[in-house]
Length: 179
Image 1 (cartoon, one colour):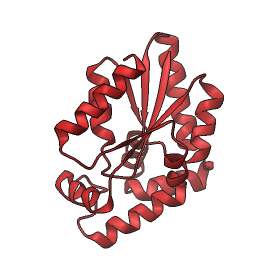
Image 2 (cartoon, rainbow, N blue to C red; image 1 turned 90 degrees about the vertical axis):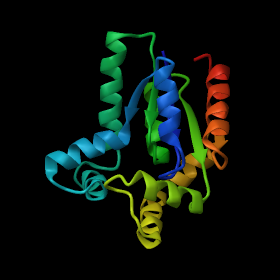
Image 3 (cartoon, rainbow, N blue to C red; image 1 turned 30 degrees about the horizontal axis):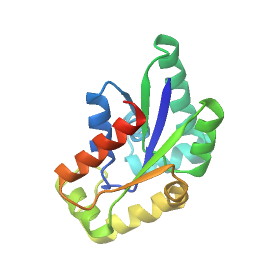
């Protein structure tokens, strides 16, 4: 069983890492999807839900739900490669390390301008189309501690070139990881 977390600010390129990992047979668990599912149940925006869940159940709630989901998957297939997408806080990293041996963190970095342009194109519900909203979202993410997670990663991939070059970097990384 190999479990790896991926972190990075919105628009940095985490989704392509997950897509390539999935093509290679990895199971992808998105912490953002867990929040989006809960937001849908509550009739709130994802941003509201991310904050409200932590207020209601503590800062560890999203990682607790993720760990529970992973442990169920491990019971079903102990030889899987699992990638957790969207790690945002040092506490989440700590919890994953407490629950899973050899937990590894990969972070993706891209500059603000590129990330903003990517988010405008992606146009997901929680993606702002104006720079002020984009910047405010970054501040929220940084408030969760994502900057510290990125700075303490086991590996960082820079995603500031064309998509083909970036995909090549990801494939090389997974080859090194044995996936």
